[in-house]
Image (cartoon, rainbow, N blue to C red; front, side, top):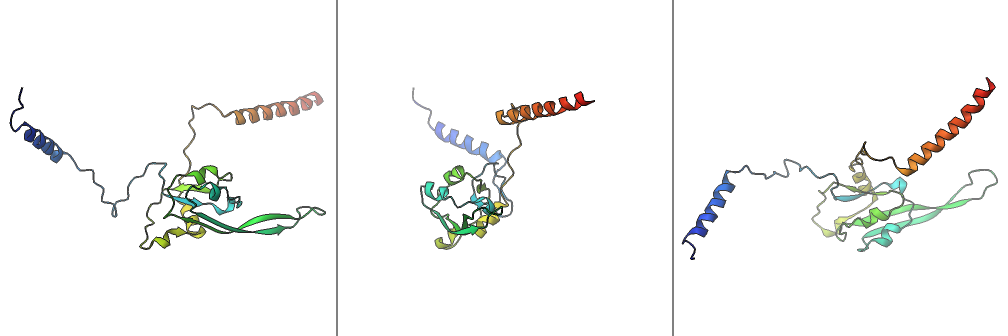
Length: 183
């Protein structure tokens, strides 16, 4: 059976008319900020106090876009007669966002929770060399990191917390028994 001449045109016009009658969903970006999903990947924020300069983030980065410089500093002994210790001090922490592919490996491998995803996405530059952001800028973005989602109240208690709670209850019961016997 041969198609009716002009049926394709009629279907196309019907789609156009349906679309014209719907409300638009365009957001006027500079005037109205978009509502971002909770786990949006914008830029990487640095919580400098947690960084121990272990270099895991720089070593695991597939793009080699993280630059870290540090020096060793001697710390006096905590107790008299103790020995001096040395620790790494962060001198430079920079991320080149012109190379970064936003994979998040650096955030996942950080054992000290020094790196976080920030939802900030307005960091465009006119010169590509300005996309290398130093630790002061990464620190500013740290304060835009949203709080973690609340735990599900119906979820099962974590095993570690349950074990700690049971141990604390046993200890409290053991301390309460001698006191009752003394009375």
